[in-house]
Image (cartoon, rainbow, N blue to C red; front, side, top):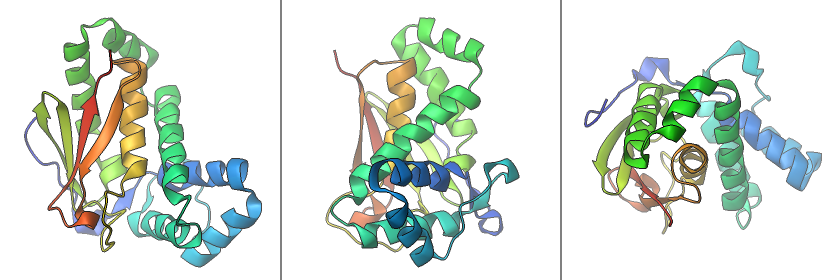
Length: 202
């Protein structure tokens, strides 16, 4: 998958339910049911049943936007918590324990390549109709073109806190303990793509 965009047909515009369900869990735990109901009501979206599989990406985008509108001063932190929770869910339910062990015992640069390739292979679950690619290794860099969760938004800074936190939890648990993922470009800030850098810490 290295170097090539992985597009998803617009007609298939769906995304994994964790984009909503993990945010709902964070709202219930951190803010309370009242804000959760306010956000979901404003978005006009019901909490999805994860057992039913992928959901329309427009629903996830509507929920994230409703959160930004409801609590603009806290939305970024809440979306980050939801992204970290999504990463934890993936580690618990989606990446086999044997595969996690292999990634951990590999030298970090090689483990990072294996994990990045797996992320690229399953990018449709978090990029929806957007297109994901790996664009660099020093530092490890990802791009999402047409990120549906921030499409149409305008900001003076990057907004993809959920995506950055998902990547950070995976790499921090499997490759570089304590690493951070920074969004260095975002379509909401006028950039052509959303770009993420994985930065290891000593």
